[in-house]
Length: 53
Image (cartoon, rainbow, N blue to C red; front, side, top):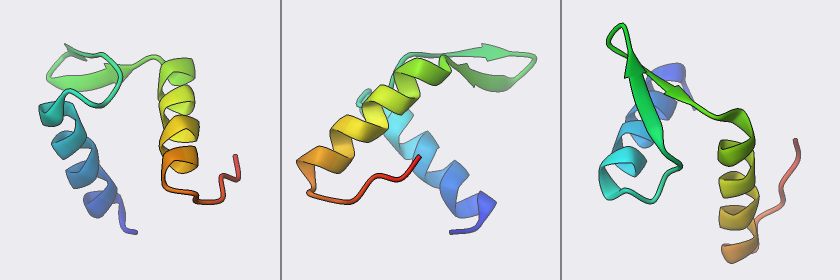
């Protein structure tokens, strides 16, 4: 995926409220890294995908 594709996916997840809490600082989204990693692992398990940190 390109950076633009990843950014688009993240924006979509934020709108769905499925993504961990985000806040804006200076017009840019900020996230808690541990929350995002936990979310990623949970989603990978739900889809039976392989997670490699």
